[in-house]
Each structure stands twice: as C-alpha cells, then as structure tokens.
Length: 339
Image (cartoon, rainbow, N blue to C red; front, side, top):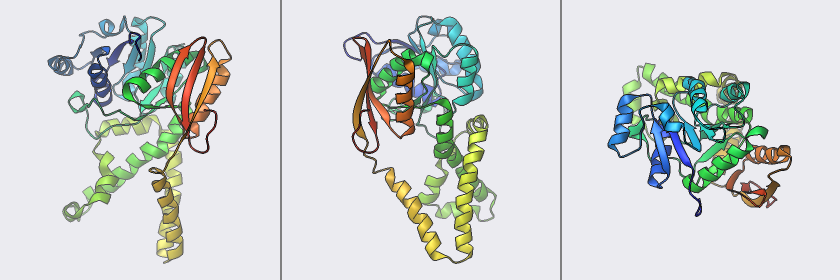
C-alpha cells in the first residue's frame, strides 16, 4: 500500500472466507473491524484479539472498504444494511460464489457505483472462523466484476487485493463469471457429490473406502463441503450449471459409447484431449503488459479492457492511480501484448 495510510476496512460475516480475509488483514496491521450475526463467533473473534463489534452499524459506519461474507441467500439483505450505514465513497464487495443475481439486485437498487461483486477462488471443505486461515487467499484468483459506474471502487479493491493478498485479480462481467465457474467449480461439486453419493449407497461402500486412494480423494474432496453451502451455490447458478452439465454429460456419453464398442482409439483420443487440458494448469505462461486510462476518460474503454483481459484467461498484478490516470499491470496467455 506504499507509505499512504491504508483504508479502514470492515468484514461482515466471518466464516471460512470472510474469516480468512479478516485474519490476513489483521496480520498485516490493517485497520479492520468485523461483525458476525452469530454471537459465539463474535466471542471467538474477541478471544483471538480481533476487533469485533456487537452491532453491524457500528462495524461499518466509518469504513472505506467493506467485504460481505455469509450464506448466499443472506447477501442481498446484508448489502442493503451495509449500504444504509456507510458513506457514498465506501467500496463494498462480497465473496459469494455466484454473481449474476446479486449484481442485478444491486443494479435495481442503484448501488453499482459502490458495490463491486467479488469471488475469491479459494476454499476448503470446512467452515467457520475456526477453520479460517490468514494465507488461504494468498495468490488466489480473485474475481471482481467492474461496471462503468463502479470503476472507482473497483480500482480501490483491485489495489487492496493485489497489495495485501498477493491476489491475481480477474476482472469479468457477472454473467461471464457465472458461466465460467459453472464449469470450473460448480459442476465439479455435482460430479463429486455423484461419485461420493454412489459409494455411500453401494453395498461395496466399506470395501471402496478401504481401497480409496488419491483419485477418489481428489475427485470427491469438495463433497465434504457443508451440504447447505453447496446447495445454495448450485441453486443460485442453476441455469449455467445445468447448461454446462449437459456439455460434461455429452463427453461422458462419448466415453461410455467408446467403451461399450471396445473402441480403444476413441478412448485414447478423448483422454489425450482431457490430459492436455489438465497439464495446461501447470504450464500457463502469461505474458506481462501495461495499460493506462485517463480517470476522466470514457469508462467504456477501461471496462472493455478489463473484461476482455479476464475472459481471455488473464489477470491484474497491479493497479495504481495518480496524475489523472489509472495504470494496470496485467498478464495474459500468449505473446507479449499491451495489457
């Protein structure tokens, strides 16, 4: 954050993700205050030496940045409550795993100039402040959904996430985010639940669990997530999840058809294709670039750059404002290019 005083921050809802944000900010010496609707959680936070308030209004009223955690169905009401008790310049973001519905809710209520939907792509199968870790989000891909009216809070949040969490800030539209995470995160939850559920119902259950090795553990890890949290996530992105599930089902059908037909070349071809995608996870070499935009310029140009960067698989590594411009350092797959 340089030599400037850091922003005053609040975390509302201190479960696994909100709690991890809180612990990281506290660890770095930030001015951070927290609130949780659960009394024992607030007491646990105070026991740990964290600044917890008893009332939400007291937590957020003088803050520059507020992060909203908690179950997905509670976020619209929490957003309204926080907006009512914070000044117009306060940047508000959430950490929910779906973005379209909440972004639409904020737009309907005239909050797009303050609210930037967010989603840190990290987590664990455990829940609550007691499971939170200050390094859980370090180097995470952290989606932020900018809008033309909300570029100022986007810049504030992007700089904070990069500087404090070493995050890879991925700018995307809310609808683009929901389509991508349906395939990268939500359908894997369905597949993990299907595999683990089949084992749970099988007469071979105990024998399977006795022999289960890395492939089963890796393939079913997210099935250990609290069931209501998974159900809320899937229900809030129902349309995209079902659409992407159809794509996965089509590939499974092709694999099954090749197996029934004893078509070894088809099986090999499909698994070579799958293997290349998997290996690409460890072989991405994004190229650096920089773009600058005048703060008083057309927001459409800046917004187009940001959304295109994220949808191309890129991310931000720097965001600085000064001398009438905002400068973004970005990385994207492929040859070096401007941004």
